[in-house]
Image 1 (cartoon, rainbow, N blue to C red):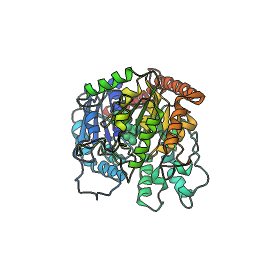
Image 2: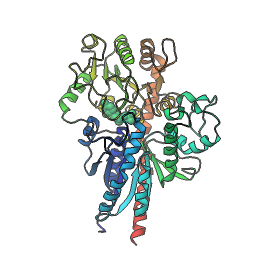
Image 3: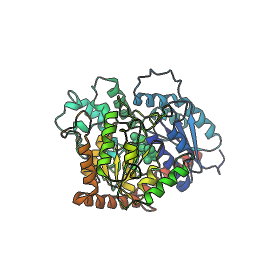
Image 4: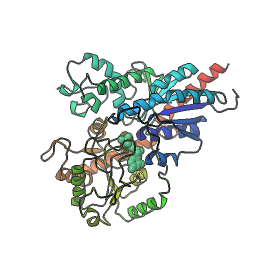
Length: 486
Ligand code: UDP
């Protein structure tokens, strides 16, 4: 291969927006800061790109080649297949495409590494065939990675079900994980396919040559410890927080500009911003209750809302849960008169919100979040204290960590009076928003999140821990090639 060609990193991401966003930022850094070329493959789950995907694809940084791979046939899985299985299936179907693309890339530039996400480790075979390292970019916190790496031994040592455990799981350097905070798949029967799929993802995490984690040492000091920077002989590197800082949205500039103008008119730290990520949905009853709570706080708000879903909290995962284009009143799911009564005080957004721009505005004083890991990191990087409203996946663990370890969030008490079965009543929502915005506890949270923001910013600066960690890995990737070329 021509000596002048930039070494290429091939990145493969399963159909999760929450993975694609930090992957795009990692790819940008590889190109801008490390002299590599990057091709980012997205293992689409459906043929029609979601609004989220389109928004991201329209703002991918220069130098990064984003390619959506063909989705598996629409009838390959029964309609009732859960999200996680769809994701894994799409990632598996991507492998032959990855092989083809890797093959044609190596004819023009030497491949330095393959980087996969937690669902796409089966593509590792391609890296093995080509003799290049396969790394995982883990887009959730170190705490979940640690649980993954320990899961086979926890599983072997457990009698009964995780949900019945009376003692929390204690991982080195992490807050204890109580049964009620475990990822959803661990609360299922251990004999279920759901749990088997989760265990197999966890075992896959141990099959790569190294792991990059989207966290930073100053937030999770135990990351990669338990050797030098290895857990169970697995090299682990904290390279975050990598978040999306680029504009989002196709043809939405005028709408976004109006939003920022509106924020400019609000008092500093006065606005509540609510978002449940790319996939999170609430039931109709919970949506109504939240609307009434917002009204009761009397505070200005921006709510990135989604059409309610009765059966599952990840009802919008593939970009299908936004306001209807098919009904006359896309906001018809809100309580009668709510939009009129809150006109001027609050904004309800139905399309993909420019979340990082909103969080970066000084008017925002509280972020009500589902604790998806990107959102959590964006809250921290923008110094905004959070109300933790976890919905699915590992979000309850993230919420526990943000509250108990980092001290930058307050969790809703879903078990309080009037609550139950995941329902949270108006009084509880109002009270937790107050805790985060007024009084001594709020002042403490603001101070802590400000300190953490400064440390996060430093981790990503020239001599910061995360920058140095990524430089170390890319140096390794480059040197393994020069060895091969000799
Ligand atoms: N996001 C956004 N606009 C929206 C909803 C989400 O820009 O209306 C972005 C958000 O900033 C974050 C990502 O989508 O970067 C969501 O990732 P996260 O890990 O928080 O949650 P997930 O979507 O994976 O549940």
